[in-house]
Image 1 (cartoon, rainbow, N blue to C red):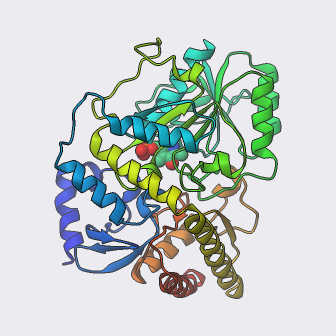
Image 2 (image 1 turned 90 degrees about the horizontal axis):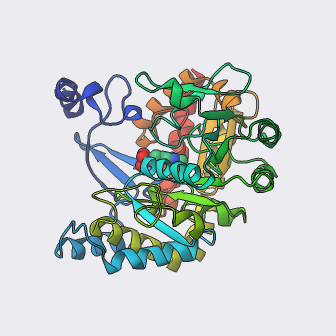
Length: 425
Ligand SMILES: *Cc1c(COP(=O)(O)O)cnc(C)c1O
């Protein structure tokens, strides 16, 4: 019996569903990991996969990036948790604020969920208003204000996505269509109790859906006209699309920004930052409460400093390279699907792409949901068999890293070719 299967049987007895985050589960059982290095990940049976899940985008510089590992190793000899401030935290905040023009101040947290939770509380504290607007399909973490789905009510009032989540909280979140700025305009004309608008500037949690031409500019203008804080959730796009994230890529300044994933290249760290007048509302100076034992722990901060410095130092090589490699990969895979006469869409931007098995363009939640998720499952399994690991869901994104080589990409194209033939049947 494969070791992964044995481990899964053991895991199911002691861990709910056998995994520690839902998307990791797929049938009949997920592979269990032995180790990872550069662009590759090995399972406990010794099979090698090229990693395009990449910690859901976190590993922009690849596994065990030497600069990051060496900073962390030297920090480990100095202690792992102080719960008192360090120079490292100041250095990281200075680096982040320099990369993100929209940030005067930034507070470090541990996870993206914590960052968005804090961003929303800040927006509410700052405006003294209640309701939040989010876009359908955007993911902002696993807490009640954002873990909502669109209700059927005319006013787009949210309902709890999860059992145990409260509809009373969910209904304070209004859900509107991505890539539709008119809908935002409309709702702001009618609703007066809006504390903030939160968005993934590139929707990377519904497969991959880039913003259409003027969409982000329009929502910036509309929120500014209504004097409502705009929150860019850059937990995926931050440091991934450019050192200054999607906001630099598109030249748009949000009021509050959240960062995570690529910030620490695989270490546990996230951040929330913005204008001083908003950020200074945080306790103890201000009255918006936020706290965490592990926030700013020196190990994660050391990892983030070296990730950020590495990205800044090599930005003229890394970002254009990833953009070109991703476009070639996505276009080639699209051509292969076309040759096989498989109806599909390929969306890509920066270092992210996804294929959807549907005839019509995918521009929002609803058009993404039309994609044939069963075909995608077939693709995922065939890719795995051919040594390619992507996130096991149609509604996640394929992430490139700086560690992927040209031969890696050639192997990936071959594997997609074989796997698309399986999808075709
Ligand atoms: C992953 C993600 C989050 C949540 O981050 P966690 O670290 O998993 O809590 C929030 N927003 C976006 C856009 C994400 O992709």
